[in-house]
Image (cartoon, rainbow, N blue to C red):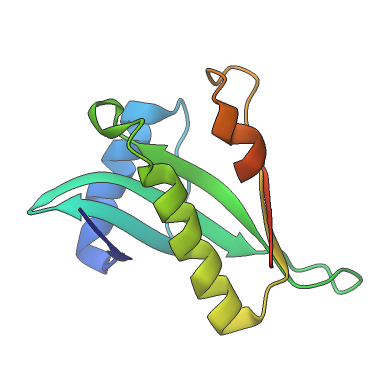
Length: 120
């Protein structure tokens, strides 16, 4: 598996992955994208942004995190989150990153850990 920053030619496949995993789609114009791929196949992505609150410390937010069902439970979502956090640290000196999880998502013990990732 290869995790890398997404390229423009990846965006349609990432949107397709989003359609498979979630009931809504996001506009593709203003986020960090990291994709998960193997060969020519895309298997997941993370969509992240920096929150713009001047009264708060710099922090990122995961808008969408998706891994196709056949690639779930392999630790890939955590790797995507780590990659997004690293990009936010390097580019914006973020102090933490948040992720809101829907109640409808099946419970996973790692979900609570992934909900808010603080810097060491």
